[in-house]
Amino acid sequence: MTTTAALPPALAEIVDDFQALEEPDRLLLLLEFSRGLPALPERLSDHPELLEQVVECQTPLFLTVETEKGDDGDVVRLFFKAPEEAPTTRGFAGVLHEGLDGLPAATILAVPDDMPDLLGLTRAITPLRMRGMSAMLGRIKRKVAAAS
Image 1: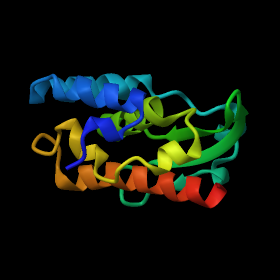
Image 2: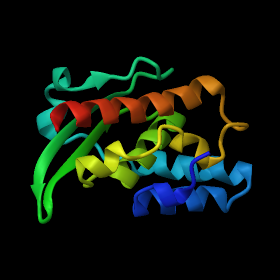
Image 3: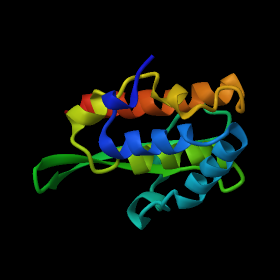
């Protein structure tokens, strides 16, 4: 099993926050992340064809990955579209956005595939939903690898 030492600092902090809570409170924290998911910028919301659906998610979730110049080289920007009435899916997207957005490609590619299990939600959320989060991370990593 992966430890938080293998994660980028922002994502490790999020995982630590989840692990510090009891299971019911973890669901509340996931709900907070769903509320914090940023809206798509207009250039993407007006062009849904630029987003890719993560079909493994129970709820329609779309994402795209862009690279931009940062102070220390290229960084990855993540954009998600998930319906308001899907707080679990939006929460997972919010965790990945807050934990990975703005990082270099190599850092994102190094995130262990089992990272979603570290949130401690496997008993509180159905296996299908957990697979959806793993699929989001996998899709992000594939798109980052293809762009690199």
